[in-house]
Each structure stands twice: as C-alpha cells, then as structure tokens.
Image 1 (cartoon, helix red, strand yellow):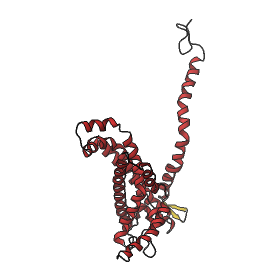
Image 2: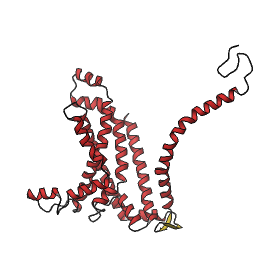
Image 3: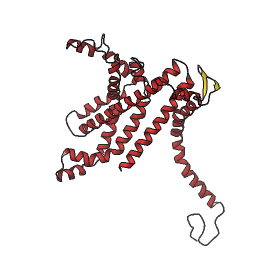
Length: 310
C-alpha cells in the first residue's frame, strides 16, 4: 500500500503521531531562522533600543548627579521649550546636518562616478579616498585642530607665508561652523562614495551601451538611466548620514567644545554639556529624546519623498 506524504496510507486512517511529528518538523524549520537572527536582534535591542527607552524614562525624572531623586513629569520638556539656548542649538544642528549631508552626498556621488570608470591607479585612489572614514572622530578632530591651529598649524603657516596672517577659522564665530561642516564632510564622504560606487557597479553595461547607441550624451545617460536607479541608495545614504550628523558630539566637542560664543553648539553637544558638565541628566535626557524623535521624523520624511518619486 502506498503512503501519502503525511505518513498515512491511501484511504487508510492516519498513523498515530505522524501529524504531530510533521508539525514538529515544521516548527523547527520555522524556528531555525529565528535562532540565527536572535543574537543580532538582541544586540540591536541592548545597544540601541534599551538606551533610548531608558533615556526617555530618565527625562521624566528630576536627577541629582547620576541618581533619580523624584518624578518630574514633563517639567524637563517644559524647560526645554522655554530655553532660548536650546532653540539656537537646534538651528545650529539643522545647518550643520543640511550642509554636511548635502555636500558629502554630492562629493561621494561625483567620486563614485569617477571611480566607476577604468583608469590607471584607480584602486590605489579608492584606498586613499576611503581613509578618512576609518579614522575615528576624536582623531579627526585632533588632526584638523592641529592643522588649523593659528599658532603652529601647517595651514596657518602656509597662509602666513602667502601674506594672510592671523587666520583662525575655528576661533571666529563667523567661520567656525562652516569649517566644522567642511571637516565633517571630509570625514563622511567616503561612506557615500563606497555605497554609491557599489550601486553603480550593479548597473549593467548593457544600459550604457544602449544609451550610447541611441546617441545619448554622458549627462543624459546619468540623468535618465543611472540617477533613477541610484535613488534608493542615495536616500539610504542621506538617512544614515543625517542620523549620524544630527547626533554628532565627538567631532564638534574635540574641535571647539561648542564655541566660540556658542557658534558650533549643536543640540547633541548641548545635551552632552547638560549631562556631564552641569550634571543635569534628566534635562540632558529630554534633549536626547528630542534628538531621537527628530531622527525618526527625518527617516520617515526621506522614505515618503522616495516613495513619492517612484
């Protein structure tokens, strides 16, 4: 007598326990992928989600040093809304983020288009251009702080020799923020370059050959063929760099500490100072919660823009 896949004979009663064994096999097959994903999910929850939730809870308490001393409700948020310094820091953050992300994405895209073409020493230039991204923010800040130092920095020395003495771009309120934006772009553009270069290499050569046969120029091929296929990657780069820049503390604090005269005091730097200079952890956690919510808003806005253009 032939058996069906569930272990029963055709036209016969089911074999006892056959269905339960099959159900267990299906359960194991479903649980195995979850078992592989579990360590990564646990890591993300422990490193990202739990600190965010703990910070939101802390923002609802009055704190003394690192201890919660009493429930404050929304008092920290009410103080934040009335803090003119916080609104100035938010404006600084928005300028810093928009300048950094826009320039880093454009430079990364331009270099990716250049490196996608075959030319001598291309691989060597790829390695050189990638080096700023692998340098930590602290080292980047110390490096550029030394290069731009008005007393002994190499750049200041060269400018002095060229007849432009006393240049201090990090010590002047009008130039400090643009200088830090430029340094942040130098640090971030390799990330955009690598992702966009990888996306360009996934575009088949058949499309380029077809557009060339149709008489399209290089600009027309980029605008009508490459750019539409790069939209998702560009959006992912923009989301990542926005979150990265909006939460930036180390680079700014290493270079200027938020000065001069608060010209580079971004919202994340204000939260750092409130927590570890003034020891107001509840107020700092409220600022951190605002940064967390704004990062979510940025991500949702980018995704909506991407969907609306498809």
